[in-house]
Length: 473
Image 1 (cartoon, rainbow, N blue to C red):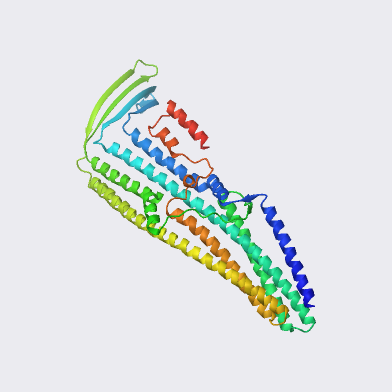
Image 2: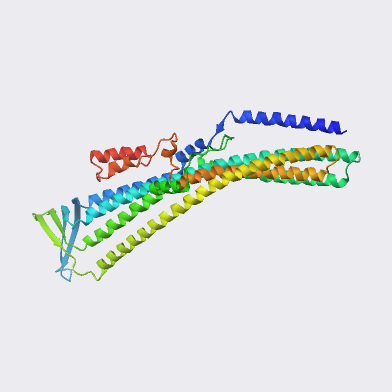
């Protein structure tokens, strides 16, 4: 009887091996990797599109500031119907009416404002540079979300495979327990224990399959399409030799730090501009108009030229308050810069330590799986010889399953920690990873709008073509 049981198990494991090999071969036909996931996320991210549009808003801020020192030309056309009535009674009342029209053209040009507008333009340019760095930081978030989604699908997929294998083994143990019960080698208690473990394994498999479906849904949300066959953990990117080198690299080029540095410069320029606003300004104005009353010879033409020097002497303290507000905002941006520096240093240290810890944990997990596998094989063989109980076999199987599950988690944690370290250093970008995508070039739109082109100019027409290429027109 024991020989027949061993023969049955050998056949079952052989069949399991054939099924596993077939599944692996099928998955290799169309496989996704982590690069595919990041490319899909980069190309389909609504968050990136949103922040690219916000960058174009900042670009237009430069154009608005540049236009502040250009003449403003406006025209007006008016038509008026005038009705008059004199006298109180019907016999003596007289009425008259007329229709008049006028057209005017005016020009206003700020010639001098103590340099405030130039400073505003420089502040807008710094805002553009800060927004570009913010876009890079958002790009990092999108790519890391893709890595997380990929690793989660792979981990849940492997967890389902483990649970399925565990269920098959427990079902074999249940059949073996029933066979031994029939020949009187074990009691009904052993069979009941095996049945309980099989029921729990089925429930755990159902939970794992649900988690896999949720992971695939998250992948589709992040990447923009359903995952193909996911069967390989992402390669671990190169990392700095030590923590100090990692932190120094992060402080040199992290997008959030660069963005805050530009924000401080913009706040400084805005504060200087507010101080210049307290000085005098000179503006030039010109206007021409023509009026005509229908049915009469009453025509008029007017031409005006003017040069205005203005200086606010007293504004109830509003100018001083505006100056203090700008100085307070500058202090706030400087404080945010200090916080950002410390945050980057702390995040890099945490990510570096997490990677080191996960690597050590994976080594321990591999050793645990090896030892648990040896123990399970030994206990199962001893059970066939009658020196171990069904409970011993079930406990050994559970320990092996726990060890394998822990190894899956350790492998996933290590992969995520490696890419989290890249993100903490500001290196998780499409350019740094050399992703095969058409990268968004912020210079194209900025170069078109920085000189504030009008609709009717050639530059304005070129800008229309750029907007159409972006799909925004």
